[in-house]
Image: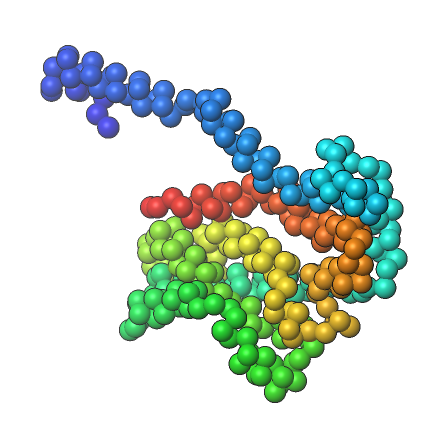
Length: 303
């Protein structure tokens, strides 16, 4: 960008004054704080998004008699939350086993999805091989296929290899996702310069070492975002685990479903179980919210 004295010498003082005004306007627009309308819209969206969780908290803090008389509870919760939580813990459903199984499935899938998606994304973004673009299009096109279409053949395969009722039948089909491959491909395409890869190869680094020491650090923001979304999707997944697992080896969504089946009319007990299953996700968002936003913004910025 040319300085104002240079502009004044080459184009005259009038052009310098115009350039100075434009720079002031641009600087003011960059440093300008959002107005009250922006905060009002954001606050409204935040309240609408948080109300279902707070409504669950209100029902979990009440009792069945009060819920039957007043389906829409007061905004001030009652003091029965800990009692309902204790009832959930003392019920005959395998809550602890469901929590442990959900953590095992979620953590293994997070590690596998991040690793394999980053490997595939690095290959599609930075390696040159025949059929690269058609293969990437094919991978992305698989996202348009509904999950329900593959349930029957997947169930037959899992039954034939003896994995029915085991956590491996839930973990293995989700160790890599088309969205993860597409996301890491798009991110590494812009975030990883070819010069770094060539410098690593000149220094004698192998393909795997170049990936581990060059591509992985560059992909960290997008990998963190992918890990968070994978954890949420795995933690809340009910459809496939309810088909392939049994009540003796459930995940947490299946446990909550068992609670609803056992105490169908006791909504305070059901909502207490739902609140317990939601708490780990809230903790993840509290401690990893900044990393999530930075990962999304890093993937959205080109260049």
